[in-house]
Amino acid sequence: MKKIAILIIEDNRLLRDGIASILKKQSDMHVVATFGNGENILLMMGKFKPNIVLLDLGLRNQNSMQVVKLIKKNFEESKIIVMDLVPLQADVFEFVQLGVAGFILKDASIAEFLKTIRSVFQGAQVLPPHLTGSLFSQIVEHAINGTKTSAIVESVRMTKREKQVIELIADGSTNKEIAQRLHLSTYTVKSHVHNILEKLALNTRVQIAKHAHLSDSYNSAMDTTSLFDE
Image (cartoon, rainbow, N blue to C red):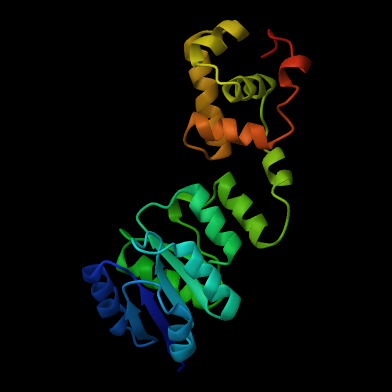
């Protein structure tokens, strides 16, 4: 049985050694090398030719994205799995666009850790569990498949009122100002904001504003919708 050749790039020595120790006990895995940074990555990749590269997202002395770019440009067959505590959606999207095949949370169980490695080796794309099933995961899936993300974003069913709230958030309005503008209670506005965050799988008002500025669907919401139309 061919073993999965794994190269580990992790600047925390204790974590690096611990991961290597766990993987070395697996009959179908072989740790070819471990490194504390991504320097000389091309030399190391050429020497060890790993099937899987486990890469720390937050390397202290080097940009992990640059490491990914170098690997994917020169060793396209090697699959990269990024390790982090809780990666931000923006980071996940950027890494996926660069060709990363999977993500492992550093607080994942050993079983989840090993499953991710095996799944990626077999050709699967593995997103962080907290994003699975969300709109964001669908956007990433479309990015992987080379499909425009606008269609999936615009397919989310927003009410006319929610579109108004999104536009006003994009304009920098507070909940109180939105409530006054739309003749609603502050509580109702908070409820709308909560629903919007849920539907778009976002975490903050700033992210809502960014989404609105990138989309054409909210630019005329205030002009085409009655302020009294729920």
